[in-house]
Amino acid sequence: EAEEDTLALMREHLPRDTPVHVHCFTSSKGMAAALLADFPQLCIGFTGVVTFKNAAAVREVVELVPLDRILLETDGPYMAPVPHRGK
Image (cartoon, rainbow, N blue to C red):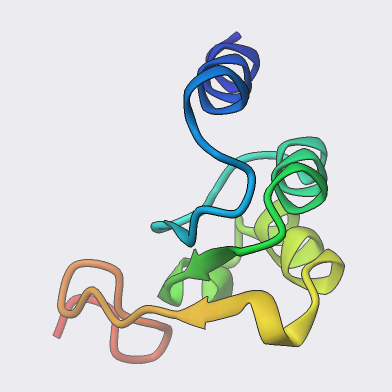
C-alpha cells in the first residue's frame, strides 16, 4: 500500500525530469520498474543489505536496474556488507 501511495504522490507532484535518488531501496521489483519507467533521471541506491542472506528479493531488484542508474551506498556502519556487518 505504501508503494502505491508513494508512486501516486511522486507522479502528481514531481516533474518527470527531476533528478531523484531513491535512498536505501528495499522495495519490490514492481516498484523499481515503475520508478525507473516514470522518472528517467531517477537512480536507485543500494546498501550492504544486498549481501545479507535474507535479501534475495533485493538482489533481484539490483539485476533489474540498469548499471547507469544504480548508486552504491555505504551507510556504514549501520548497513555494512557481509563480512563487515556489526564491526
